[in-house]
Amino acid sequence: MQTNLAPEYKNTADGITAEGILRKCVHCGFCNATCPTYQLLGDELDGPRGRIYLMKQVLEGAMPTRKTQLHLDRCLTCRNCETTCPSGVDYGHLVDIGRKLVDAKVARPVGERALRWALKEGLPSPLFAPAMRLGQTVRGWLPEALKNKVPARQPAGIWPTRRHPRKVLLLAGCVQPAMMPNINRATARVLDAAGIQTLVAAGSGCCGAVKFHLDDQDGGKAEMRANIDAWWPYIESGIEADIAAGDDGAVEAIVMNASGCGVTVKEYGHILRDDPLYAEKAQRVSALTRDLSELLPDMVEALRGKLHRSDTVEISGMREEREGLNAVDARLIAFHPPCTLQHGQQLRGGVEKHLNALGFNIRLSNDEAHLCCGSAGTYSVLNPELAYQLRDRKLGHLEELRPAVIVSANIGCITHLQSGTATPVRHWVELLDEALTRPVD
Image 1 (tube, rainbow, N blue to C red):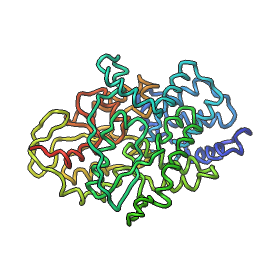
Image 2 (cartoon, rainbow, N blue to C red):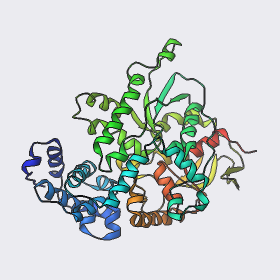
Image 3 (spheres, rainbow, N blue to C red):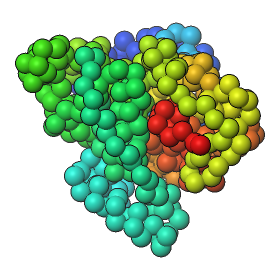
Image 4 (spheres, rainbow, N blue to C red):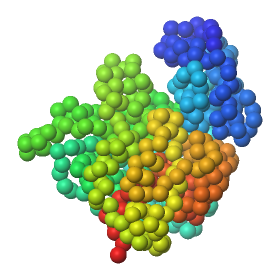
């Protein structure tokens, strides 16, 4: 797509990057076929090709309007279009630039600004945990819309204390420790069973995605730099205490058990590429980052003999009969692969393949497994009508399988899907953890 940048963007980093992306687009429209908002709304400007035209106009000097902003806001940034695109258009990075340029010129209504500020400042805040505990205490009295965002309190179990020569860093995340603490602890227990020690660096926090995608790219970058600073001693020189004890203290990976965080941290190198102090470190951090599912191939043999096989399983207080004596868990488990896993990180098939190899009965939905569930970070708060339509569409396909449990790989998807179904929605690592640590007599 030929683009003539306006003088104000011609020699800027954003302008040069955007122009390179736009030149790959050949107007084919294949992207619209897999765009969730185009599927719902049928509006060319609510599909990737139409949004690309809007951003191209802005880059060429056209004044954006509130309508321009709304069409960009409605994008889930699911990046399904990137998977579909035959020309390799890097739409995710382009829409980051487009939103930044439009937001600089189009003022938002006061109420919208207030909500976006509350989300970007509140979710990564230390006050989020006590606020979540209060919400869980009074959850039964909350209005439905708010209750949907406050999961019931869950037991978290213990963090393993064994030391291993193999070590990884885990990003605890900003909301996950308060909303669903068992996910991190289950991760640590599963890795421990595979002979891998899980460490959480003091000073690490939000991956930066919340602020970065809510009109505060500078704030998001500051959180990214803080994580790099927290992780760098573990990456560069290992852990002094462990080295003194006689083993190699260096970590082999930075593990993400929330795919939304994973896709962001894997892009630190791109986002901070022009930062003279952090560009090189960010590239190394991104290269070390692994989604938890990427460790499964190496863990299958280590875990295989440690899984408990029994005739019943207990989940959420319900005991169910198993089918098949050789299965770890023969109940049908439906897997929802988050967009940040299958499109953002281009990781598909690994969870299903390796959990089935371990004795689970896990399946994708028969229809539209590639489409977004509508969670998309803060999207379900900012665009609830579209988000709930996508949620119900996704759950309709998943529940056609009649699963005993639905699993996913991102806390946002888990919370969003659970708000629309009585079927338990879990992180896949929790089921693996229970097969390791909670045998049923």
